[in-house]
Length: 346
Image 1 (spheres, rainbow, N blue to C red):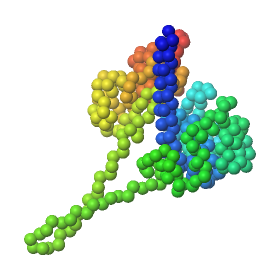
Image 2: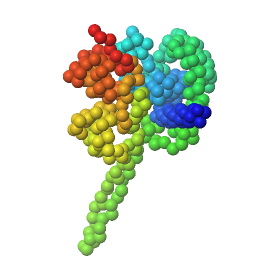
Image 3: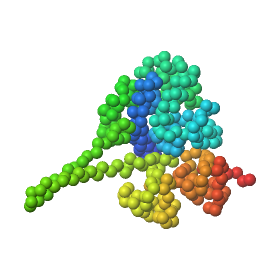
Image 4: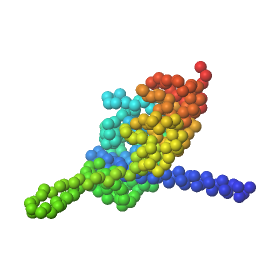
């Protein structure tokens, strides 16, 4: 019995360590992609970059949240009365709440700075030193930024585990070097939004001619190095890796790119034929789950049951069963679907 319990404990600890490693890896990638924006905002609005990054990581689950992916909203900022831009509905404290939708991640970071700088209940935070990330973390909780009583402690833990406090001592020109020093080599195009890859031109020498007449030289543009396919792979809240299909991509091309099989992709994504693949759909590399990460999903304009099952990572037959419908059912915009439990009988 003792040996059996020890074996069970070993696998539990192994699972937890693998999960923690994956989470840490995603968080490092988040910092690599967004540290420049955080430091840029710190220079302009005097908000510690460590705080901004920690909040972004926490609010988006390392960049994987629906709000981050579909609305570029990295800080969970709701619409409020003064918001006149685009919006997206999302289940938070209540079903179908209104959240802000941005044109870029940089715009989300700027709005986060304004959100703190222009509201009186955050005013005392700006009396703190830029390097006092602990004061900022607890001050945000005290001012009502979040309802979680441990919000400040969670931010501090994120900052210290990832050494984010080091970004509070630099400027934007030093971000790339700091990222390399902390986490190792990173593609400059990922870490620096202002970086422009220099076009490399190769000069082809003319062949010698019998009449010795000068021949024009030819300038050839060297093909750019292709981006690492793994850079577009994301991790869904249900714990499965996926990509968003680009226009023109085929299932066979994706299978070859990611060293897998077409049949497996069809099985995992409930496709009966390769031709059913559509651009902008979620495509998983392993089986979807029997239930979603959240209890409910609010139907968006133009979505059908298959699209929803892909977006939420729940198997289509389970989505049908939980909502007591069949494949012919067409959900209406704004309708609430169950991803956990079952819809009550009417």
